Amino acid sequence: MSAETLAPTARHGSGAPAGPPPRTSGAPTPLMKVWGAIWPKLLAVFLAVSIWQITVWSGWKEEYLLPPPSEVFGELSDAVRTQPFWEAISTTMQRAGIGFAFSLAFGTLLGIAVSQSKILRSGVGSMITGLQTMPSIVWFPFAMLLFGTFSPFAIMFVIVLGAAPSIANGVISGIDEVPPPLLRAGHMLGARGVNRYRYVVLPAALPAYLAGLKQGWAFAWRSLMAGELIVQLSGEVTLGGNLHDAQVTGQAENLMAYMIVILVIGMVVDTIFGVITNRVRARRGLTGFTG
Image (cartoon, one colour):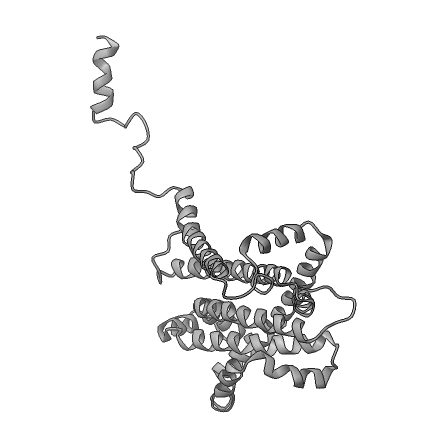
């Protein structure tokens, strides 16, 4: 029997298929997923820049007050080639990381304590929400009085007060939403005391906790920017300090360039938190996210 006669049998017979099944056309490729996540952001940037340019063309303000996008992005392109630009980002991000770490520790411990004590919940619970709603700038006169006008501790103090309440509320909400059957099952398996929180409560509360962290970062970032604008530290280059200097000297292009940098950093970190939160929720079947 010839090879040509055997070929159809090999292809259509009842045995194992000759090769892997064809890929379905509807399955998104990794490149398609990346593009699907990026294009809405690019569209938003395009619309924002277009509105900005149209506003400049309208003559609403003189260009030395409201420069066009080309001048601002040109200034930004020049700035990224200088060492002070990256030094400012490094100093600001180090302070943001340290402040958020303190907020994370304090807010987590406070949230656990309040969620487990009726007395603390009754006395402190509403105060935490009240602190969360207070504008960060309100704390700076008090912080500067406590730590000094030119002290970095004044900025850290306000960062913690701005971010910790959001983190604490995330912990409280997450623990309150842990299903009672899960707690009983953990108790039957021997999860008591610290192990109860380590293996049962905190993992179950993780989605709400991450949402609190994301919101806490937003408050910490805003508090830090306000602090660097108000508390000017001698010999230190920061993003907020550069904003202040550009405003004082009337350099609108430089001012708006640093505003864009601050916006981009905030968006990047917020996106990272969003990806982590979606993946955690997806593992628990709480969203349709499959990335």
